[in-house]
Image 1 (tube, rainbow, N blue to C red):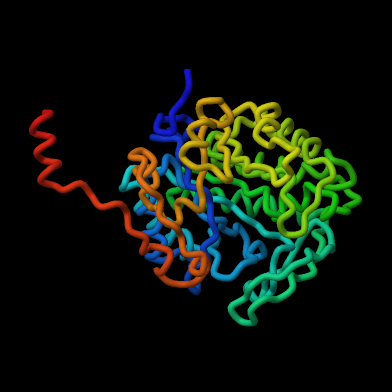
Image 2 (image 1 turned 180 degrees about the vertical axis):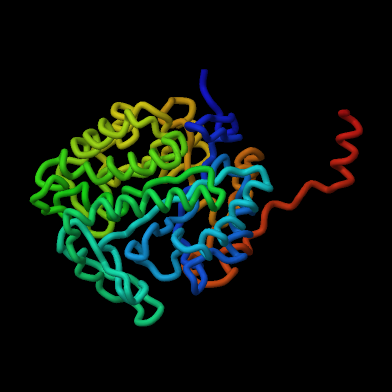
Length: 369
């Protein structure tokens, strides 16, 4: 029996009304306290028709912030502000989880608190630049390598971030292990040259991610925890000679944890089928991501490639994406220039489809009681 995008699905403890997932997207609109604003409340509530919203990457530690105007889940102010967001989504019948994102070396001190550091597995700078409101594009910081005894503290910051997310009303959390951020930095040799038991071998390099997931699952329950990966992703100066081997080992190690889902993006390497790799090594629901439209997503459900499909760009300009897919309505285009700018423009001002004329709707209900 094949599944439709509009069929309900169970991901761990998350009972979803449909299989259309809103992917996490950095939109750089947090306030001066790195907290969501009323704009965020409107933005996420507008998109609550998704089976699940994965909220934007959010730092679990002040050291984990990298980009300007990105939110945290650390302070009481941030937790209270996120609670308004989750209330808005839940009031519209939606589900929402928070993506925990520690960027590690992908950072600049110009976007951090004055007492925050840029840390990583090893003292290896990522080639590239980041935007800061203060200076424009600047090189990424040279990170300080974590001492062996500090790693447990970083893992505990993730655990506490998950606890804070549940306190803020989220239905679960997703660990970001892609895009060259801290867990991926531990995972790959290009950024991990450690000589202790968090490096040296593949079993050492996967250890940080496995222990972080174990800590989060121990705090909030594994059935409310997801993992995001993209094998072979070179973003933020990453390189992996054998991503199939690397991620096969990682998924073999985390599969027994009983996670709610694995969120896997299509590999940029055309020779690597990341979805098939995930199916081979992960015993649990798959959310597949990247480049899907309504037709290809429907095919992915029909052929068992994934259990749900996530969309990013389509959700930017189409807050009612689920309705548009259901009605085969045209999709609006998003304004690339306003993706990361402050304010409502290009964020909450994309209109939904016009509602059905209320007189016609009433007449139809009368004709079909």
